[in-house]
Image (cartoon, rainbow, N blue to C red; front, side, top):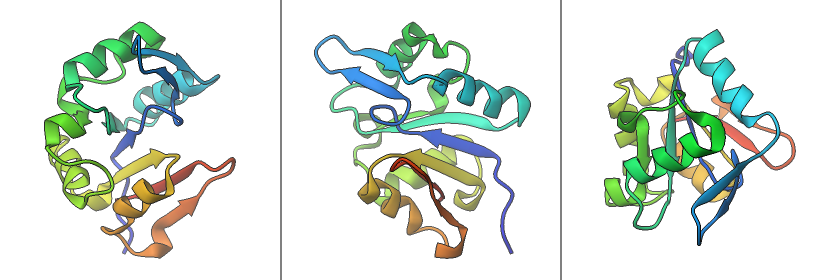
Length: 143
């Protein structure tokens, strides 16, 4: 039985936009702000971030997102960074932590990212028949 998706977690760099590592400036891809807004406001999904951000903590990532036009679409509780988690994608523990933050079962969460290895980490929690290979190299999976 397939679970209903209740939350979606996005990677940032290469998924929502390009990040300048020196200035921590996020330049959103066209339509990415509208996509997140629609998932949150029109579909009623919890929206979160799941990112390997070096030493950055959730608050710094949230500030970067707000400066890029994503204000009000994420909250600090649903921004999960590798620094906060103590592990990085594709370690399964970071996906489980993200699900616990919403709080939902992993099968009720979706991960959107561009890195196949990170997507495979999310896939460890579901049957392959519930994953979707997206276009343009983007991958979307339930985890």
